[in-house]
Length: 96
Image (cartoon, rainbow, N blue to C red; front, side, top):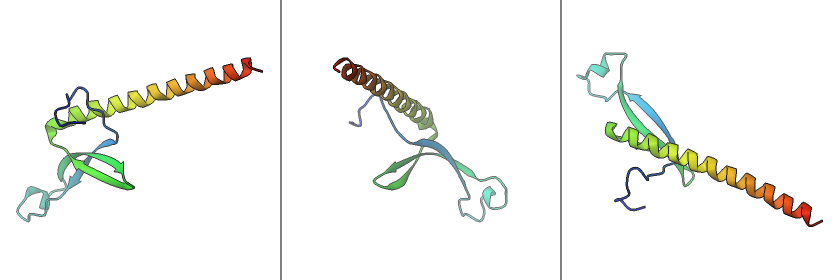
């Protein structure tokens, strides 16, 4: 996939999550508060490892849409495979 791919065609697998953390600066509001900094992220399992890609806020909607396209494609492929299996079984039954 080239970097010039239309964002409306992007397909991603993984899941969206939000990390909450303290930044470590002693003078930051998070050091003395129960609230923490939140960062959206895409979590992907690849090459036997879990990878985390921190997202910019404006990327979250695009990534969510790309994840939904992946899920839809997976559902469509599973339905095609089920139909293919049914067709194969019917052909075998007819050949007996």
